[in-house]
Length: 161
Length: 101
Image (cartoon, rainbow over all chains, first blue to last red; front, side, top):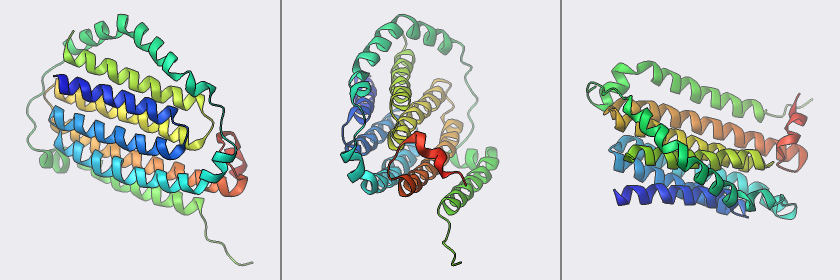
């Protein structure tokens, strides 16, 4: 129980750090740590497949993409940084939201949780993925193809005139 | 208060931080970082709801689809960032309309 709450607190702290960090590289690394914490929460909730995907794709691949993009634009970003005032005000805004939400949100979520209907057991993850949700696999393949087309249309090959 | 209500309270806080980042910043990288934080909160909600209803199998199958979509969105957003940087020399979200053909 305590470990579970500690992981959620860590996730919020890493998110705050990622938003407030002055350097974009620090933000990208904190985002990776947030992903690691979220995947630990998945493992803790009993969802190992989701945890493995989160750890390999979100903490690995997306961090590499972010660090690659940040290293391209870093010199100019450091020369003309954004105004820091809105980011320095974030802890205050988050604290106001947390205190105001404490009076309403947990009661609402408790009521929401009381409406649950327990599901029938639906077998293994393999059966769910390949039998029950096969259209999802097709959707994923189409989504990846769409991503490839976006990259290709954003960076067209230069043709000689 | 149940443990799920406390989890969802933290998830709401995480989502607030992500939305704040997207509202406060004009840099495309920070917009994407805010989007990532919001999508992490959404993923936590899906898995937490799956654990609540004892139906983690379907929740995990849905979450794998979400992760694939998230990767494609981030890759497309970063490609736009690099293109915008080559055209305008900065990463300002308000300069994106200069990319129109």
